[in-house]
Amino acid sequence: MTEKRMSRWYFGGLASCGAACCTHPLDLIKVHLQTQQEVKKRMLGMAIHVMKNDGMLALYNGLSASLCRQMSYSLTRFAIYETVRDMMGSTNKGPMPFYQKVLLGAFGGFTGGFVGTPADMVNVRMQNDMKLPPELRRNYKHAFDGLFRVFREEGLRKLFSGASMASSRGAMVTVGQLACYDQAKQLVLGTGMMGDNIFTHFLSSFIAGGCATFLCQPLDVMKTRLMNSKGEYTGVIHCLRETAKLGPMAFYKGLVPAGIRLVPQTVLTFIFLEQLKKHFGILIIS
Image 1 (cartoon, rainbow, N blue to C red):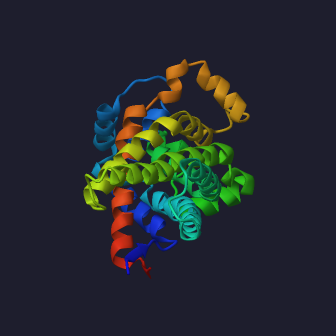
Image 2: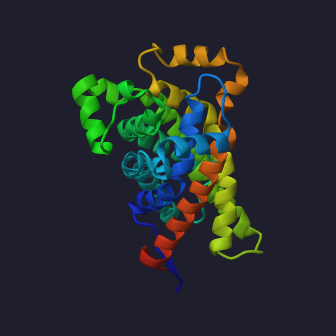
């Protein structure tokens, strides 16, 4: 008889919230860098600028929207991916092939990206608000105030502005994070050199974070520009053309901060997830 712990459907959302609390300042700086029209400041310069102008706590602007986003976007994608993977794993003899993990990750991420678009847009706006002149600031009190005001002032369609970009990015990130994490963990354990412990989880999630950053950065730049726009882009294609005019590297603007944010977030998410699964998961005896 062997004992095994299975993840509960909501563990991914909880783990992502824990990771978001740790990495939120990096996410805020990334948004500031991406919304610059010309490259004026690098990562450290932007962090100093934010703290000097608005204080230390300004690095946590929009945290409520970030947590709201994790509980919609990440909860959905993890729930779909982990539930279907565990169901298929219990019917098959071995683990899922990598191409099935990629397809499942893309579907889960696309769905999660769409569900999380309203909270994501409010998150971007709240983080970017302090950069605007006082008369142009939106001054949302918290995430739910932001969602209600966008719905009341700009309509339901505006809540899903950038949904195609957010869904596409969600698919890419989930393939990079979940599918690559599962595959990397499977390969690391397959060597026989490491057991199923926190070091394996760290190494696998570090690889997954790197894959996710590279895959989704162009979409992330466009998503941020669309969500933060005040009507200067007519759609995704127009935004793509305007960004392309700045040169191919414009799509990878903020790549290092994105990596510095996404890799630790991926590592923390999976370490929290594995610990939740180990201590509170569903016990399966086979």
